[in-house]
Amino acid sequence: MIKRMLIIHCAVVLAVTVFAGGFALSQDDVTAVQDSAFKERMRPRAVFFHEDHNEKAEIEECSVCHHVYEDGELLEDETSEDMECSECHLKDDDKAALSLVKVYHQQCRGCHLEQKKGPITCSECHVKE
Image (cartoon, rainbow, N blue to C red; front, side, top):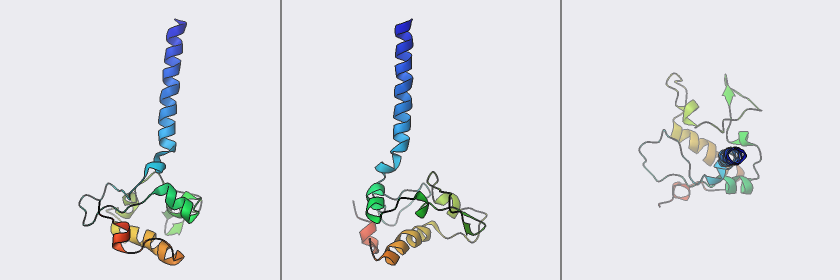
């Protein structure tokens, strides 16, 4: 009985550790810009190493890239890191939403131009595999 309880306890601890560890490290594995809304591509996925990018750019706050707006106002302490960009930028009822491609280019390329760092041409991001 004790042996069985110990095995169950270990299995539960292992499952929680694997789940929590995988969730916590999920951004470490990001190597390309991905969004389920991109069904057909004109170019290869944009290469993007999440952790390397944030280290080089010295970005510590997720909301720098993963922003949240409400009624046109930026919510300072909110992040959209658990959402795809298309969840907000492709709403059917929002006629003013930018196309998803334009949103990515505006956010990523715009920041690179502003900072005078990082890739800005098509082939620098959309590297052929």
